[in-house]
Every structure is written in structure tokens, then in C-alpha cells.
Image (tube, rainbow, N blue to C red; front, side, top):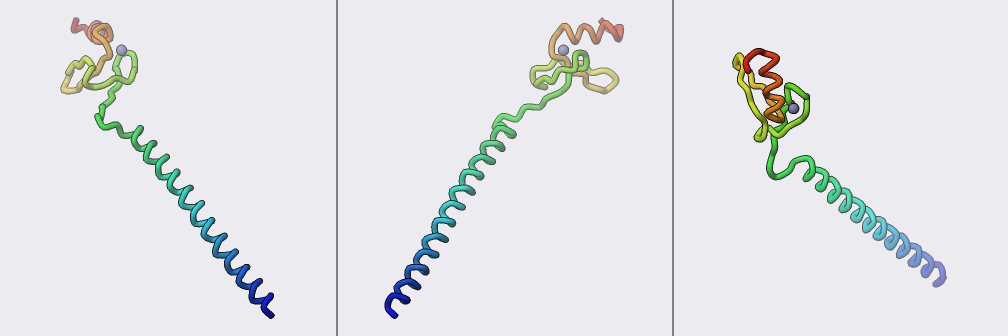
Length: 95
Ligand SMILES: [Zn+2]
């Protein structure tokens, strides 16, 4: 009879141990996933937010703060370089 009690205790402890390991492993997995998504979000939204605009002449994505801007008919046109700006002006006869 003692052997049966011993076996029941052993199984009981075994299941507790197994569930504890399972919890521990789940925590590790969620932790690493959270850190991974945080890192991804950090790359998505940099601390200094840049506004990108499209060069009207060569279609390049450019930082708005570094772009050459022409206002024509109340619309803003962005250019990556002075050359692109001049090309646009030549095409539209404003050079
Ligand atoms: Zn350009």
C-alpha cells in the first residue's frame, strides 16, 4: 500500500515539475518575442522623425528638410538636387 502512495506522490510531483518547466519556457518565449517586436518598432519609428517626399523630377524619396522646394500654383514640388530643380524649371519655362 505504501508503494502506491509513493507512486501517486511521485506522479503528482512529476506533473507539477512538468507544468513549472512549461510555464518557464513560455515566459522565455514571450520575453524574447516582446523584445523582438520592440526592436522592430524602434526601427519603424526613429526618435527623430523624418518626413520623406518624392522628387518630382527623378522620383527619388528624399528627406523633406533637405529637399529643394518650388511652389507653383500653390502646390509644392520637391527636388533632391539643384539639377532636378533646374530640369523642372526648364520644362515649365521658368528658368
Ligand atoms: Zn532628383
